[in-house]
Image (cartoon, rainbow, N blue to C red):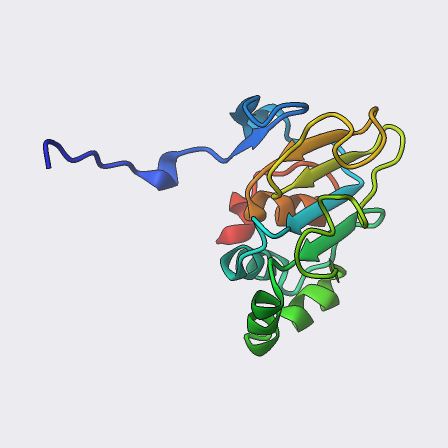
Length: 164
């Protein structure tokens, strides 16, 4: 190696992509408090076991905020089965999350359609205007931990308080 770079990831802030471009990135602190009506983790690209396991850790023993739809779509049937075997599904359902068909359903959208003026935070791959429904809706993108923490509070939330 020419050089080694050491990064203290614990000191790095959580970030989100603000509407309507995934390159519109800011520290989560800039948007903390933005009310949400929907939270999504999953899709064929972002519904890995690790993503869902983080959400279950954040949700364990807690409840999704009233008025928030929290959708989780495992990437595949195989991932869904991993989650079942690991006991994650029970934790997620007890918290008020809703598991939907594995794969691409949340992206098309077949489920999770946003209405006029609604806001979603998602760990999926895109946040273009109209991507999840009405063009007046807003889609923020964040990590699975940020999405799960936001589902608990009902507004965009820094997940660190839920990860300890």
